[in-house]
Length: 232
Ligand code: FES
Image (cartoon, rainbow, N blue to C red; front, side, top):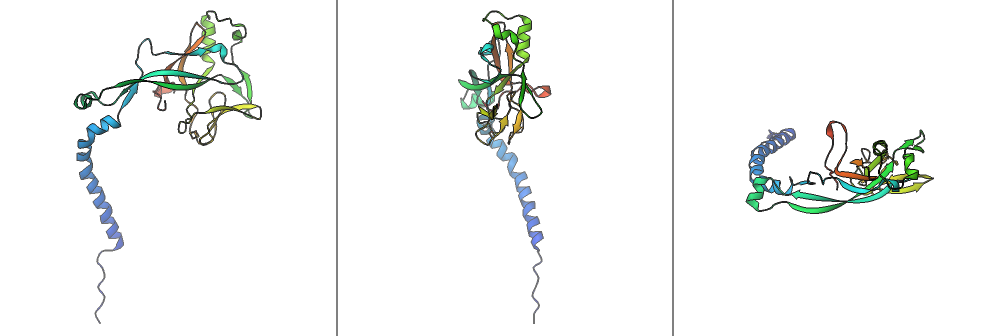
């Protein structure tokens, strides 16, 4: 009886050839495809946005005297933003140029607060001069004290950007994200849930007029900051 002939190619060989073919195909296909699609990628993916730089790139938030020590205060700021759709060369070829529009952004502003071992809140560092503040010109020392003790927080959750809300729970307040339950304390520091970090902080300054001003950028500190907000 004739012996059954074995298939000379094993299953492992077959899979190996398949993977090798995929790699070779990708090497041959990606460079020409990237060349052909470069203008489209420039327009649709590499768009940039920016707030015009100069003396007007600070934006008024509001009077610091309105911020109490018990809870953060909610503010809205309109940032004019330039959206640039492409690199200059592609703009010329496509006729697409930049657009200007306003982005309304929400901020939570609180006074730096001591966090005790059990997570409850201790002393608030709201400057005492604000108890009798009549709206006059602040001294240099008062400006500095207020500036150093403010938390100027983006309301966009550091997980996927949902707007966080201030809620009271068992006497203590917290900034809660309604999307996946991320929790931050009054200083904007991460407490629980999926967010990978604290809330983002805006670059800010307090001025002699007793008001808070921000730039459209996050003060992330160290070598990485400041950064343009990714979620606006
Ligand atoms: S977006 Fe806030 S926890 Fe996911």
